[in-house]
Image 1: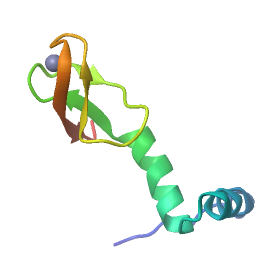
Image 2 (image 1 turned 60 degrees about the horizontal axis):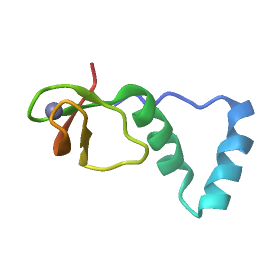
Image 3 (image 1 turned 45 degrees about the horizontal axis):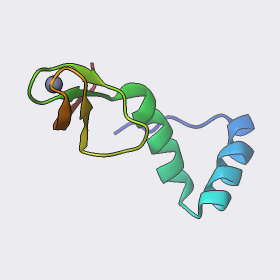
Image 4 (image 1 turned 45 degrees about the vertical axis):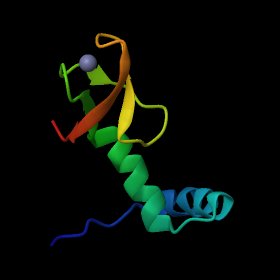
Length: 74
Ligand SMILES: [Zn+2]
């Protein structure tokens, strides 16, 4: 599988975040990309749910309750 190279200028930034959060750089990059690419929807009514942090449940305003989410890369 093709793995695109990360820009040199971004490496120090990613490195700093990884150091601060004590996580591997790959994980930091993947999390940032996931936040950007993956959207979460209510499993009951399909409303898009914005998550503050990664979770497989979230509060759906339409269902007025905590609901399970489905992730999708639209
Ligand atoms: Zn819902």
